Image (tube, rainbow, N blue to C red; front, side):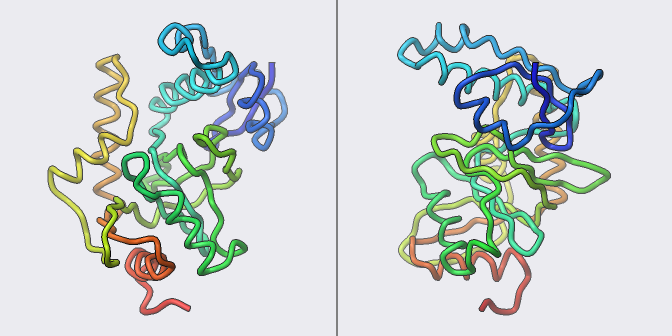
Length: 235
């Protein structure tokens, strides 16, 4: 059995393949009382998706187990691409194929990858700690193994829409709630589903949420950063 430190929680997990490789960044000494014990049950995923390999099933099942238990620690995983810049985390969420990963790569192109670091490219954890929302890297990062074992307070969340011109403005209302709900896992357990709604409500109350309409020009990164950081201008 191996132990990992993920989202400031000690996780006990016996895994293999891609999950084990990507979790290596988070390895920690054994702990007699881990916060989370992952029993992934990949056979359930295999039954639903028989074309997936055993390794892929383990990857999905272990991530799902972590997510469900994370809810008990005021946290969840948000389908997004997260970048850390100047000590703050910025999350970009949208339906698959919209360009989340492309947009965060633009931040690295414009500001340099030494200043703008990808925290996680698909499933960062977000967790409320002492009244502050933090974003964390996790081993579960979608198709690409892009993850960093780091955390930062969340400065903003942007919902991305493709558009010919770049613009950004505060988001709110029912449309925003519905969009964010699509980007979080909603367990079948009524208690856990209710916890997701409570946490999402708190996240939207404490963290600015934006609608970013953008193209794939580097200027999109400058527009997003200027608004989300409160900066007057960008280098």
